[in-house]
Amino acid sequence: MLYKKHLPVTLVAIGTVSILFSVISSSMPLTGVGIALVIAGVVVHLRLKKTSSKNILISVVLISTIIFLCSGCAVKVPMTPDVGHLGISKKLPAKAALLITEDTRKYVFTGKPESLTGALRPHAFPLGMAMEQASVQAFSQVFRDVSLVRTPAEAKRYRIVIEPEIEDFHFRYDQLTYVGFGIAVLSKIKVRVTLASGETRIWERSIESPEQKKGPWMLDLNYIEKTGESASDALVYTLKKIAKEIARDATVKRLARSSVSVAKAEPKKKPALIRHKKTVQPKRQEVSSVSQRWAVVIGISDYDDSRIPSLRYAATDAKTFYNWLISPQGGRYTPSRVKLLLNKKATGKNIKNALFVWLKRAIKEDLVTIYFAGHGSPESPDSPDNLFLLPYDTQYDNIAATGFPMWDIETALKRFIKARKVIVIADACHSGGVGQSFDVARRAARAIRVNPISSGLQSLSKMGDGVCVISASDDKQFSQEDRKWGGGHGVFTYFLLEGLKGEADYSRDGSVTLGELIPFLSEQVRRATRNAQSPTIAGKFDPAITIGR
Image 1 (spheres, rainbow, N blue to C red):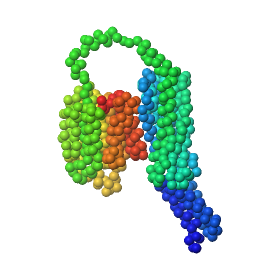
Image 2: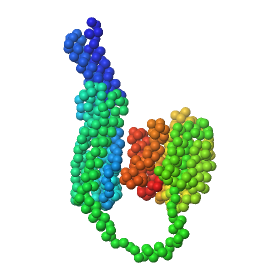
Image 3: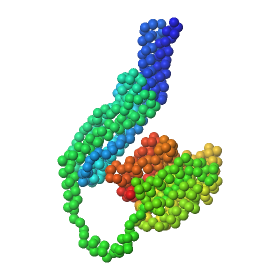
């Protein structure tokens, strides 16, 4: 009967290993299994009374130590709330400020689940950032125009000020029902929203969501994503309900209508302007002022010099962006006004011709979009300020003579492209530097860890008002690409396209402005890469501009 003697120890040991694996891998259902096995081992020991109490004590101490060591390691929970369409037939005719201070935006709830079993580690929920994203989506469907402001001083310029606040948050894992083999997460949140006009509070409401459940599921190493979905659903529930109540409230409606009446009552200057228009504006100028949209799209995955590392999806990213631009359901660009240069066609000569010659056809009223996906690099570690985009025919050992200099793009914007609205989109930070000189530096253990190409791109915005530069990452980061993003894309271009297709249309008016696209793109890329990649934006431009029509 030797097996009976060792059975309790075996059960406790297996249970302990299960709990340890659960904590390390975040495979939460095994926590319940482990605890059940430990309890079973103790029960068998008490029945047989042959197993050393010392062995049981050691197992219990080991479990307690694991719990203590892991109790301080917080799990970062991603939250991506999606409010969707509220079904509000008509927006209130008023401009409103959405007041979310920096402290509110940075608020992160950190705590353990309110359940007996489940994850042993505390969880960190970025509730502030999630509330900002969901609030913009929700209240943009209630009011004609909603502006995000950070301070009460900024908010004073608006007749209506919306201020949301998180009052309470709870989450738990329901595991006992499934005896450790299945698990569900439940979250609930309480949100208060206040509307003010000047110093007067005109509307206030607190709503607590019912528990939002995700699961049950079995063994799942990605359970944290479902936890975030549950919390996001709870937040969306409260804001949707509050937004609909605001849209129906009679007091808010009267205030919105009165703000429009005040605007209409302001005196308008007429006489002198009308006479000047008739004498100054010739008919020919009116015809030429009809704006067009132009684009140059460049993507290079494979280089002529095999010593330059290939990229997996740069050409695919460019082709997909091009397809969206000319699509009747997308950007609706005239195909003859979009030039696509992929791989072998993206030589230095062809790129220069596109920017210096072909885009000269655009007039000042037009919009020009320049998209580049490929390698960008300094000349060498010793010349970090000499920045180049790398065309297809770049030579590995002679970037200075065969790369496309950043100052040539500045020249194109300053001397050849007449359009006053230019959007430069670049995904060129895939490595710290490309070329023989960088390999030499690495062998000497002097490799640079940053790629200043992003700063070089941002400097293009200094060419004048109306130039917007969007880069995939900052100087200290590398651009990521993987199959998990749309079956094969760079993370930057994947979310760029998702936003343009409508995910960034927070106002639900059928168009995606730069003011909507940029925060969406920045937020989604940072979340998808766990802050390893952050798009950068530079320039003085109108946030109401749209890349497509």
